[in-house]
Length: 469
Image 1 (cartoon, one colour):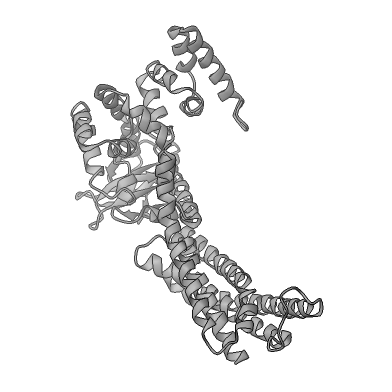
Image 2 (image 1 turned 90 degrees about the vertical axis):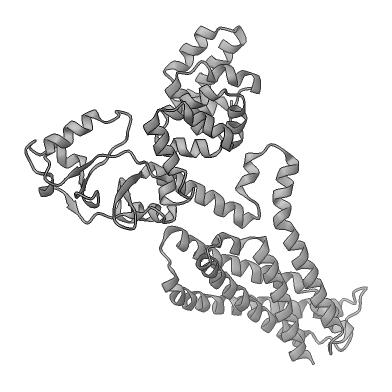
């Protein structure tokens, strides 16, 4: 049993495995007929490849569609490759337009065209329209299925419309539009059920509803739903025409995707790594991030070599080099702390570009205190280490031109300057990346960490040279 597995999933897996072992297709179909799609998808991951197709073809079309969407990307890709175009068309037909568009987008162009030809015309038109929007925009994740009525219609007509609507659709509001289909209000369903059927919708509608533009980033929809505690947010175009809606569960998927993406970026890899079982392809993804680290480290080594030929003596340079890892690591961690605070604020919408001055002022004050404390510890510690090495007559003697106290002062100021530089990068780079449309999480990845190592070493050795020369 997998650690942390739901007992219902374990029981379902045991039943499915037993049916597969007996080659009892009838019992297999019965075992999965009433099971939840999410439980089937979780149990599906535990099955051998040869058994997966048998389970899928035992599922009714609607359940099959739900299960396929819930599978991990890598597993879904393998499953889809084995399916016929007819089966894929059945899946697309059963899915909501937004989910179907995501599914079709993963197919190659020729296969997607073939699949859409066997999908009902209205449904395929909606899917094709959604595919014209960027995958990470509000239009790319919206569901065009909704109920839109005029303000002069009644509660009775709204309820009649709800009854005709697809029963599996998750509806929260009836939207009010004018003659031009522009959104002018919305009515929560709870108001409909407590009002007389003759009540005019205009009298109970919420005017000027919160909306998101169809070309806005999907994160804007997430922030709108979180900030205003909405069950769904309507999507409109530049003229205010109602195009679709984004529900709470849609943006929860967005939040999960964005969080995963940020974690991958900060760790120096990519979500594409999860989409492959090949260690070579995964290694290629990681190397794309590690090569800049190698380059940055080589440049930092070049900086040390450059300072070795400066006014510093060889023994002073050797002593200062002892503390380069400590300076780089401590300042780098201070910068990561600052960038993490900024990244979280940008991700949740709590921080905008207009608040960079506030964030900068706060983090600078924090950096001053942190810098002084770290510098004091490293300065005193470094001075004490050199003095101890001299008094104990280590194998490598400490020459007279390496004065522990003065070295401690150099380390002290070098640490303060390095932390100040690192915190500044940690604050400003996420804002700058966001401004130019680059994922701010990269500001905490290996690329920027390498840049910080290079700068911190340069600043540390420069300040030391000024003090010791």
